[in-house]
Image 1 (cartoon, rainbow, N blue to C red):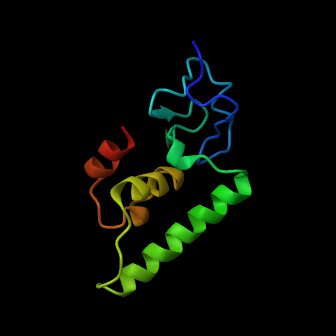
Image 2 (cartoon, rainbow, N blue to C red):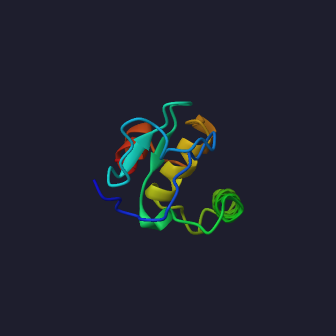
Length: 110
């Protein structure tokens, strides 16, 4: 089967394991649960970065923006899709749910 994202290597948001090397991985699946750590990963062109450093910089920025928004109730709220990615990356940490329910976050990862 041809790759949906040719030339793109996918890594787990939590443990950085190569998803491409995991049995059954298909980049057209939308989400993939890492076989090494169990983290749910979003497979989408919205989350293609030039490097791991760029990804981690983006993630740190998203977390900082959400923390600032939590301090300012009139601030911009993180989208459920971005919140779900951060939540999954953090190992489904309940402190990283950003006001969404577990059901909303799991649905956004589908």
